Every structure is written in structure tokens, then in C-alpha cells.
Length: 288
Image (cartoon, rainbow, N blue to C red; front, side, top):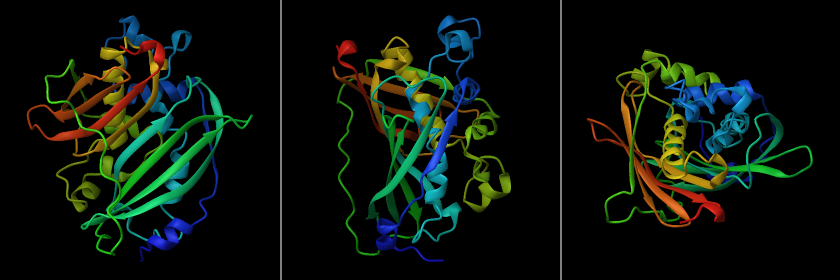
């Protein structure tokens, strides 16, 4: 197996198709914990077709075939168990429909030397049948053991939370089988289901998907800070800084910065950071 930054940057990633219907939206939103109080209208709106709304973090699902395809491009000849999802960003120009079809166009935009590993950054643009961009995902994949090749370390993180108490604090409990449910939205990595695979990767037991934690934090901020208005979000970026074991509680803290909300999340009890350097940009009409 070989890891080659130059070949990765020059690689031609084939286009993929993304399709979804209301059932796919509901399955995803159940997978990030929506609907815990099924008679609460605000929760029912995430899981019931007549009033269905689509969380902007759902943009990470239709593009997933391209993420899977990128793991086998020229220069990415590594053991998939050595690849961790390190960071993720989405741009959402407008509301995401509850059903749609897109073509995902992918390109590598950077391979950075992080010492103990390499960070591969990919952009996936998802366009509809008219050629309009419905959403764009930027993915950072941390490849363990492939650093030290002499490349640049990449841009410095640009998001840091304020030195004051947060404006909102939200606790989101996960459930023991949550990774088993979330994986049905597309990420079938056995790391999140098979105890033997998790042990091989160095974990005591299967861990929650990073994108599941990403969605949980997005929903927490949308509900607590934006009144549940999923259409208010224009962009959302975050770094995955630690693991969550299904059944633990994620505590999200968020700060109002006017045209954006900054956030970070940790695991209750253990205090382990989970999502850091998170930023949700909002539309003009909902700015403070």
C-alpha cells in the first residue's frame, strides 16, 4: 500500500449520484436523536412527512458516495481503518428539499503534513438537474501514520470560542444503539458496529460516527439558538476532536456572535472534547 500526496491532488475522482426521499431524511434525523419526544411539535417536524423539515447537516448524506469513492483514488492506497474523519464543513445556499437528486463532483484541494498523520481535504459540490448547487461539503480526512512527508501543515484554525460564558448550553443524550441506526444512512464502516473491528482500531467498543456527533451539535444549536429554523443556516463547519460512545451525553455550548454562532461540545462525565471550532453562519433575517 502507498500514500502519495501528489497523486492524490492530481487524481480524477469520478462523479457520483445522490438521491433521497422523505424516508431518508427521517432516518437520518432519527439517527441523530430527533423525535425523542414524539408529541412535541418541534420534534415531530423532524420525523413526520406532512410537516417535515430538513436539518442542514443532512447535506452530508447525499454526498457520501463520493466520500466512499475518494478512499480508493490513486495515491490513497491505505488501510481504511487508519482513516478518521477529522473535520467537516457544509455550505447551504438555500433550504434543502425533502426529496431530490444531485450529481456529486469531487476534487482534492489539499494534502497536509500533520506529523503523526496526513490531512486530506476534499470538496464535494452537489448540483441538481438544472445545474444549480444545492450544497457543498468540504471534508478533512486524517490518515494516521502517513505524516512526515515534508508537506505544509495547512491553514491555522480560524474559529475560537469567546472568553465568556456561553449563551446557550444544550445536553443531547445518545442511546446505546444509536450508531447501529445512524449507519443505515450510508456509513457502514464496521468501526461503528463490530466490537472486534473497534478493538483493532484501538477503541474499547464501537464508537459513534463523527458525522452523527456533527449532526447532533447542529440540531442543538438550531433548536436552542435559531428557534428550530433550519432554513436560517447558510454554513456549518466543525472539527472532530474526540470520540463518543453510544449511550453518552453530548453537551453543546454556543455563543451568539451576531451573524454566526460559535460552538464546542464535550462528553458529559468524561469531559472529552467531541466537536470543537464549530461555526454556524446564519442568514441576514435571523442575525442578532
